[in-house]
Amino acid sequence: MGGSLIVISGPSGVGKGTVVKRLLAEMPDLYISVSVTTRKPRPGEIPGKDYIFIDDKQFEEMVVNNQLLEWAYVHGHYYGTPKRQVFDKLAEGKTVILEIDMQGAMQVQRSVDDVVLIFLLPPSIKELANRLDKRGTEDEEIRKLRVLRSLQELDYIVDYDFMVLNEDLDVAVQSIKNIINMSKWVVTRGRARYLINKLKNGGVIDYEDFDFNKFKEGER
Image (cartoon, rainbow, N blue to C red):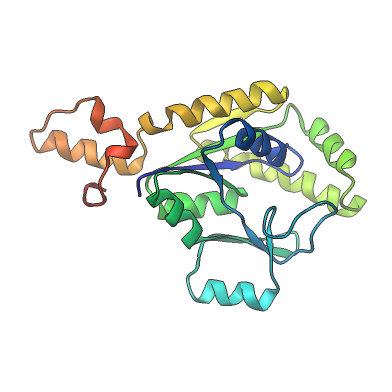
């Protein structure tokens, strides 16, 4: 893979979709992976652009055929990331964004060495609940479940590489742009093993060893 893989996660209502849309508008070379899901489209969502909407049987077939990079069952529906579109874009040298939940992020971290994980934080749980209310896409019971789940999801933060506060949208977007621009210099697990082996074998490390795009398949 020649590109960079960036995962953006955060609790429901934190503003992941809004942040990602701004990133795509301001960084046209980015590629956003479109997830598959078994839930119904929300008002305004465009099939094939926001999500690929499929039924349970189709999703289960993708799982059995190992076609998903990650998948999870959330609030009564399946969500997953098709492998092929991600790896094809990485092979083209693209920076690929995955907007996925924490379960999925942990699966990606276990299966892909060179991935940068970003956790988008709300200013407070109260503000998160307010944003869910304003969104108005679920009933009261589902909103309460989402807030409860958000409290549990905060425990995942320690497994992420970066945390970004989404209190001011402009600041949050710029922070993530900075992380993406520096991502090729971040030492992920795959590159860490490469650097350690190089030192142990008497090699000399220089700045090119930190450049994501200079890594070859045999060096992972």
